[in-house]
Image 1 (cartoon, rainbow, N blue to C red):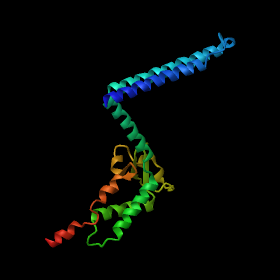
Image 2: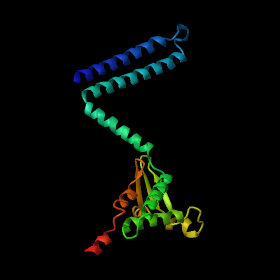
Image 3: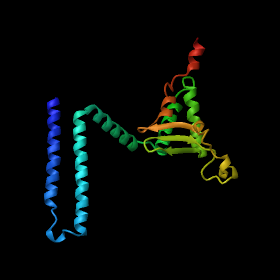
Image 4: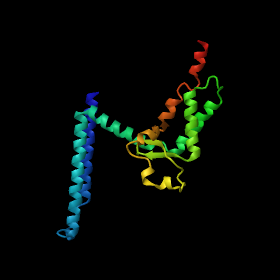
Length: 203
């Protein structure tokens, strides 16, 4: 297995070198352009291409000598790219909230989990009042609760001293979204069809 891996790296290196030589031969500057601005421009790109070729060689060599580190780096890059692509937005939040609300509503009050029920009622009230806010942090998002509807023009909604403060902002966060899911709702819906009070009455 190690032989195959080493052989693959050698083939990749050879191909990079051959590609560099092919480009170098193909883009030879004609004699009439030598000594002027065009030659300097061509030299700049030639040096730049050599630098990138050296970087590629270094990456191949390090990947060969440190495969675990290479897999970790590329795995992290891939995971980050996937997180960015699946970063949930406010529409995803509303859809997930609607789905979970419907799941709770079809249950009888006797078996409905009060914690999940109250949380969904609170979030729905915030949606109806227009106080839901989403903070996009590229790879993940945060849902927090504002004081007023965005279209509200009352003085308290415009005064900078009455707006959410940085030190207490964490108290307003109600959900954390990543990989296409809103984790807060997901946790609250755990055992949503089990009412602890039902078991207390039986005891």
